[in-house]
Image 1 (cartoon, helix red, strand yellow):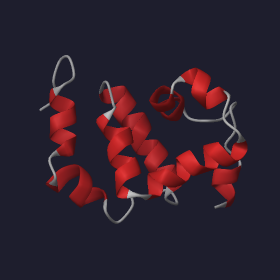
Image 2 (cartoon, one colour):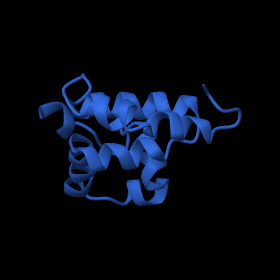
Image 3 (cartoon, rainbow, N blue to C red):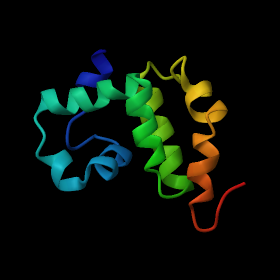
Image 4 (tube, rainbow, N blue to C red):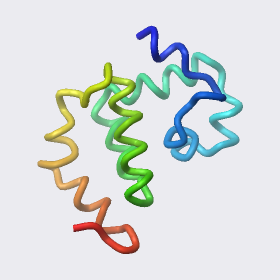
Length: 100
């Protein structure tokens, strides 16, 4: 929890600013930023972030952001929500060139 509170507009990972839009992220209050990061502890929040990945680098950055929000490891629902659901494959097939 303490680590999440240290994230501000200067240290916020690229993935969050990309997902939210740079202007939105930079104009958010600390509470709003905390709420966005807290959403990465929920299946819905993680699905939305990961589905918005536009390439392999952004996917990796988003993975790092999810892990950071969840104590440096993937949340318990990760495998089911990303892998078993097919979301990872579906998202990666949209990239140019597709992965997989």
